[in-house]
Image (cartoon, rainbow, N blue to C red; front, top):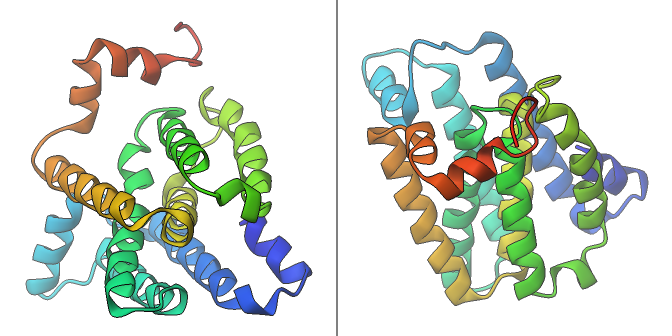
Length: 218
């Protein structure tokens, strides 16, 4: 949201569509946080509910997220291949951070890892100074989140995920994008069948990273 406000204040007209997209994904995430049906779980559950005549907030969020991903992919990309690639990347990245937002600090740790990966493998930081602003703000937020004083919720997680999707679409290499897409698809398939938290807890390295910074842990 911070980046959205800065873009608006500086009136960077060429980025107004990105600003609008960030605002919409935040609003739909907020709606899901406030009025979402917690009984329906997973993307498969929301799709199943839809075909049974029930439109859940989760399905609405996924549908609008898909439209946003499609719009931005067309806006950012040039060739059809790039547009398709960016669409898939943004679509799956939007929800990825949300998948990890189950324990204090976990989702933002994933953000920092993906931010670092993009920073060292592309020209991202040299061409997008606003990325540093977002990073700084989320670093401050992290210490509140990891101590369970606040929660990102769907609004925060989807907003962060959309930021990453846009950044990776704009600055990552084509081969890197497809590797990331395949990884994200695999991650979503896994979480539809198994518990991500259980996977993390059963792996010593992942568990140690997951626990780092929480009160009463190392």
